Amino acid sequence: MIYLKSLFISLLFLSTSVVFGQALTAKEIIKKSEEKIRGGNQVYTEMTIEIIRPKWSREMKLKSWTLGTDYSMVLITGPTRDKGSVFLKNQKQVWGYIPKFNRITKLPPALMSQSWMGTDLTNDDLVRESNKVDDFKYFLKKDTMIDNLSCYQIELIPNEGTDVIWGKIILFIDKVDFITLRNESYDEDNQLVNVLKASMIKIMDGVKIATKMEIIPIEEKGKKTIMTIEKLDVHQSLDAIFYSKQNMKRVK
Image 1: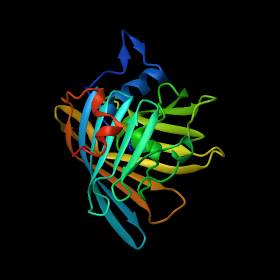
Image 2: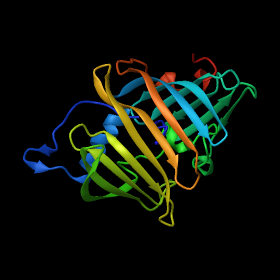
Image 3: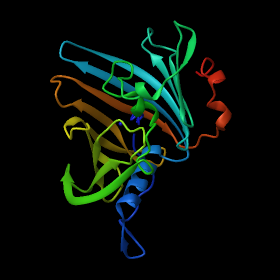
């Protein structure tokens, strides 16, 4: 889910579904979709996250920076009680900084499946610890329609030995723009846990993306998290030194 699911998020250029007259494999489709999610090698995003519960709701504002698949930094800019909190992925290590504790803490793998900041995102979604290209086996299923768009349907099963929190994932990927329009996450007992729905397709900074994503827990009525991308910049020029623990307290 960033993406948040992680960060979570969708991008890049239009492509056809045939390469040199050959149909794309499931892995090639996943790779194109992952490129859409990243939006390029370096991406800056501003986003609003709305947490909806049966009796209350609240909003968070955040900024995020990514460099390839190894580095990401997320800064919360509002509300006041959460402002200045930072989450960093530096290759395989994930760190969190909460200003009121004035301490940088490493997140162990056991915490990657836990809720991030009270949302329906996990810590894994936030920094995209798992990699859909490398950490899964893929099975191309029957094409289907989502929002009147023809989509590939791909089932992902985690490889043995990978730190993946899901038993399986089913993706529905638009066959023209390779935007993931729906993501179904299942537990190890093959029970559907949550659904991510992407919508409001727009062109931002020259790339076509889904600017709204809803994460809906299946067994918790009245709960969902809505992520809305408000700004996208795919022309960043930060190097890896930006994504350091030392910078977590300085980033703005």
